[in-house]
Image (cartoon, rainbow, N blue to C red; front, side, top):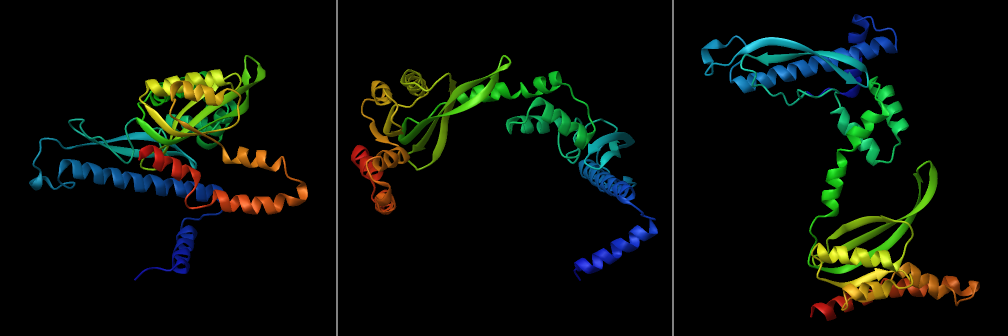
Length: 304
């Protein structure tokens, strides 16, 4: 019979009373012991599966490998240090999955945590403080830099990956950010191209960083996309940057240019008085929400 939440709490209360739990420190220690016990039982079960026979069941042993005691390992967790006994085998072939050999924390490898925080935009100081607070580890800026540098080859591989030969639509725009460079704050343009292939799958084709948004830089982006396998773009959705259309046409002369809907709407409202804006927006919403829009018509014409 499944236990209710009320029943489980009553049993937990009885256990805590028997263990003389008085404050949060005692509860924290109890959690650590529970986690350690669960991990040790799981590791013993893993080794049993590896060897093919249970402890002391020597009659069913079909391997020359056998248990060879335990080794102590101290793991970092949000509850504090947890010491567990890792079972060993005589031949040294046992590769535990629950707690891997090089694992230093219960929530995963510490390097993966640092890379994840770095990818989310946390600064070196933020990462250092977070690791210190949660895991009790002191990590220098140089160590964090060494770890995060591991993602650079992966990023470069992604930037150079081959692309589809034809994209039905490619959206291109730049976002401006303030970044720190050599002790001062400067403005950078981050160029982004998002493509939709002929199956309707959307993909980020690339991200590039430049000083300021310019048609010349976009031309270099077009050439790079061409070199990575993009032979044709049916429709390019862009803003009204001067020279942008010419830059696209120089590499993809058959590409249809459509201005971004947001920019089209902004341009439309420039010639309408404020009191008529609401009515105009209702009409535009019906136009751009039509099931057979301009994009679909152009796709059919080019593909047909």
